Length: 419
Image (cartoon, rainbow, N blue to C red; front, side, top):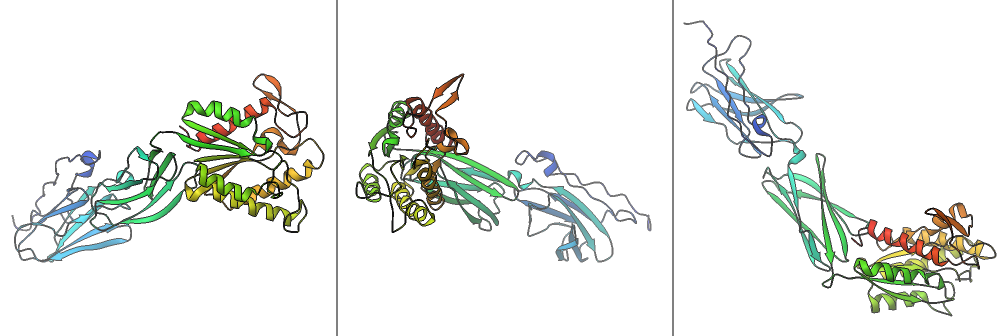
């Protein structure tokens, strides 16, 4: 039969279920060149073991052969050798890739014969697995494991940890070549729901870890001037059923700009050291407006000094990440000099919180009670109009304090401080 081309059989390997990919990850085929196929060269490809492609070549002994892989930019050489036997398993094995799942290979002998094989590997969309404990004790280190199901490593991952209330912190880590897992972790400094996120260009994973004190209670400090009164009572009543204990400390007629009455910066340090609150709810500023550092209220120099002092307080209550401050902005007053002081205080608090994001979060009661800076004594709540301000045009009424407490609790739940 000299001079005639013989038809080579197709090389098909049985299905292998790998991470849900099934037969698609194992199928291999053989194709012949345009001039016809030759029994003398057969190439097969297998997507196993996990993370690797195994090539098997049947070709004439002693005839040099080159194996290449088709890519978007042409053909890349895989290996060139001279077989010493008819059947060879090509070494080293090729690794699966994230950027190319359909792999096409061609074996060409020195005398012009060739054969091809294709195999499809899993995508990187399910390559990694994230493991962490669902619960942790406050102050303890939490282990986080990023597991490479392909077991080949050599992959950059971004690991982010977000404490309850935030903000999160991210860093880039690398699975070493040949490493099946990456071990990372964080210290759960305060109670609440921590989030761990892992991402690559192909995959995003997330896990939640709830940190608790041994007794399971979250300590809350409700403090400030007379604005915190009544509101602190609602917090104590409503948070008691949610696993939190509330301590009140209202200092009437005090302010950040009048340290002769009470030095709030020093007082904040004492409260933080003595009470060690997990959460501080602060409502302060109705008695401010006094000159500071040679600056009268309420210009830019005064706002800057107020922001500096408030930021120091936020950092003190934050206790190096162990606490979280929820500072309530002042709703606009009805009239008088409060109309000038309250916006200046709020502007300073916004500036302070911007420089203390790790420690503080503002709750915008000004937007709830006085949107656009427009004073209103009555609000529509539910199906009725409710008086939310006291007769002095400054303080919240009982109904207004109840609404403010509801907003604070909703914020604590949204930020995963409370379940």
